[in-house]
Image (tube, rainbow, N blue to C red; front, side):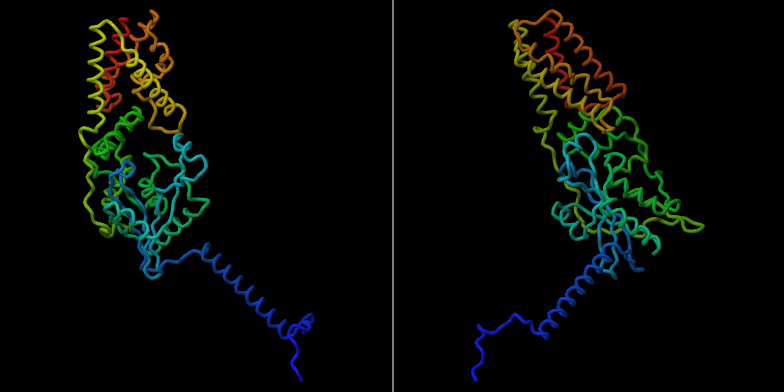
Length: 414
């Protein structure tokens, strides 16, 4: 008897054995999927119990050559070799793709966040930039290690990770002491006796921007007199180097005595601090001095020939007016606390923007002479503010002030 032709076999009636096997496979697949989902859910939300070998360190990173990296960096490290855990908890990250990122940045409403990464991933950029990295292993008992770890894990959740950044009072460095104090309470003892100076915020910034002259110039223009008062020793903590020094002298209360907060310090990456030498010929003081010398010669020629180079006055009025508008915006239209009470507005005079078309004309009205005499009085107030300590100015504005005084004097005599 010939076997049936496969093409003619009736498959409309299912084979019971095949059906049973198919149902078994489906149930096994669904059960496996449910188990995987349960494991994933548990891994995401269950609390990890650290071993007694777990240690938490304060990480301090050396300064880089770019302006944004001149001040160094701080973070936490949680290392548990028995659980295969070695993570960095970094309060110094932000999302470029966040809605209205650049607008919020300008307005002083930038959201920073706590991010978690492996130690290897964290160290890559520092190794590439040849920046040193040091770890201060904290002298915590297993219970305190677990408590601090739980706090960081909870803080890293999507609903908790964001915070409103403030360069001086709430950044990656200030968070280190804040978190330790919140977790340990009165057991954490931080002092300031090791700080022997009484610097202002502007001076502290200047200590770290010596090799970024243009960046320092921009900072000095944008920030007002509020950062020229003595910062207070506690306020030094916005800089990672001072957090490092603070932990060297910090103590933790243990029953009837206080013991060092740091058990040991070790170098993770060893590099010399990079030196980015600012070229003299490219510094703002040098460039603005050259421009001032050129414009002084033009002004002398105008005076000798009894004429006026209108393009010079138009450019200076446009420059000072636009800069003044920017400084007013930073003072009144943003949440930046350090941009208030900016005496640079005495020479970067915002109303000049409304006089650009007028000063470009050949004939000037008589009242315009009085306007320029007022500008001369405002400029005279700049060295007065400087000498009395109301606000410190960047030395690079001196040649600019010189040129403005000359041109305003010529206009007041027209």
